[in-house]
Amino acid sequence: MNRSSGSIQTQSNPMNTKNLLVLPDNLPVPEDDGACVHLEGTNMPAIALASTSGSKVKLGFEDGILVVYFYPMTGRPDAPPMVGWNEIPGARGCTPQSCSFRDHHSDLLDLGAKVYGVSSQSPEDQKEAVQRLHLPFELLSDSKFELASALRLPTFEYNALRLIKRLTLIIENGAIRKVFYPVFPPNENAANVVAWLQQNTA
Image 1 (cartoon, rainbow, N blue to C red):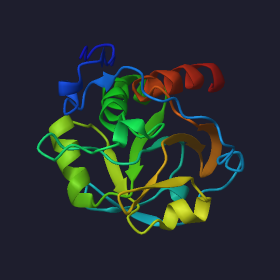
Image 2: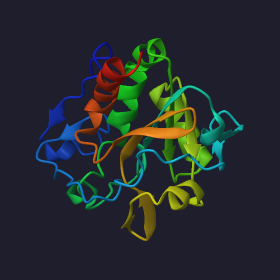
Image 3: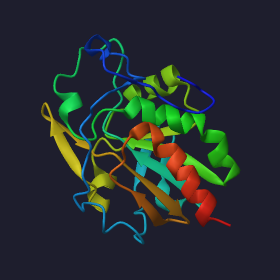
Image 4: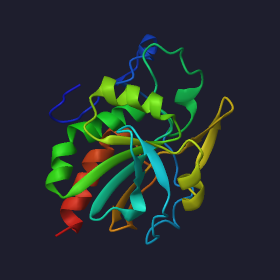
């Protein structure tokens, strides 16, 4: 991985499925099912989520510009292979997406944006990802789907797990200003967010 550009290479070798930094070739492309059309202009609810910093964060109460990316779940290199995961459109790529926001973090800060990642994983799993991937921002746990339900975010099922589909919100002073959905490829999400902010903020 090129840390300066945030780029992630693709890899077709099936033996490399546990290299979480690599996006396999020929991943199915998620289609826009209209599940997020209601979000733009919506005010964020006053729901507190547990953060990897140990605090609680209410996204709707934060001033300024927030970039909040929702992702299904980050894998772990020591975990068993997730059978069928690559075949679910939009599921694979949480680690490359997080790394792209890490690598573009200074660009986003320069644009006045604060970054959060949100999933339904436990704060403990998220802390492991923050440490292993050296993420310079907080991850928030919506394990009870309080925020996802309030915003009516799209979800999907995998092996009896309910997970949030990948999407990214740009929030300004508590209101959703821009929605990226579906997000594909995930490793280009941060660069696309930077480009949008450069064109649409003062």
